[in-house]
Image 1 (cartoon, rainbow, N blue to C red):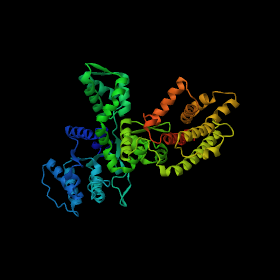
Image 2 (image 1 turned 135 degrees about the vertical axis):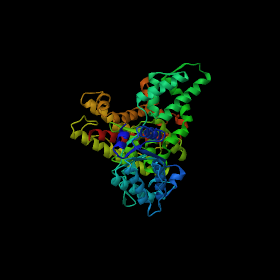
Image 3 (image 1 turned 30 degrees about the vertical axis):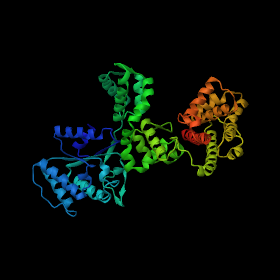
Length: 511
């Protein structure tokens, strides 16, 4: 209704979002409403069609004019050469205005006829000519508006194109078409599930929504594959529990690989910078991702798509099935075992020196901010001890080197917390104060404590052992240590990356 009202007021609008979120269906619905209420003559163009995208700007104007003339039941034979096309197009719009008829141009898949086009690069120049004509007609005749649809709003957010002002800049308001809400997902799953003899309980729908981010196509296909798998040996009707979905999720996702790629294909094709950001996030390179994300328009697009969300300063996946796919694809291309991107051997010494210095610097910054805000201290008044020893850490290759590394980390960052707690009469300072006030930093310090305990104790009690298995499973992505080459460096990188990233999260929350 909002977009329909905009057309009535002859205003321009745009809708953006990932593939298969319903943008084209949205335009078709809008077109039907325009026609049924006789608001305007809607002209719909699918810009990815070869006859459209291969056209020059003046040829596309002629095609649009032909459709308008047909709707007006008039003849419009004019010269649509490069020099005269704009005037000819103006005349057909003027004829519609003289009949008190509005024209609404609807351009779907706008990327294919824009300055980011990959297949038909003449649009890098033709884009300005085409939209200068549109803007001129609209500003003079007042009976013409347009709706555009695509993946990314950069076509309307970029101020200049090849040194010339972008005619679309500042004249098109837009929104994102994201996935379903939690309630909408429940309605769809329950409705379709009932027809298939599947009863999804509350928890299973919550898990499905969390994993597929409410993406309509991926959610529907996942439920369809659940039905296919369960139909083989299960009598219907059957209740789908959270456990059943968890057990079958990987099989379902295996069938959805093509569709996950399809969802982000245009992002990868047309907007390589944003896709690179998504690869950083999906491969666990959170420090680099966070550094690039600060104040960057690309992260705003990724959050508006509904792929990534930012909660309390922390970036999280809102569509894990897609970010996992992107991470796996990157790992395959790099011929890596793990999705998490491990520093190449030749770069490790330089990386380690830089990372250790960054950690010490950021820990100091965090402490100063805490003091400035009269917050609860972490390491006490003299900060963490043995900074020189921390800086002497070497690249880990063997188990003995890892034991030495984890002991240094523990002495610097964990035992110093315990010692400070004891000095002020609180032997649970780590568990009570640090955990409550600095939860992100606590998480990585807890991992250091657990790994150190595993190295130095023959047996672990039940709770500690469970936590060790949880941390190791996460760090090695479900593989056993024997299945991961260079496992001790992998764990070293995980810990140091976690230290710098989680420290920066704490800085962001209180600065």
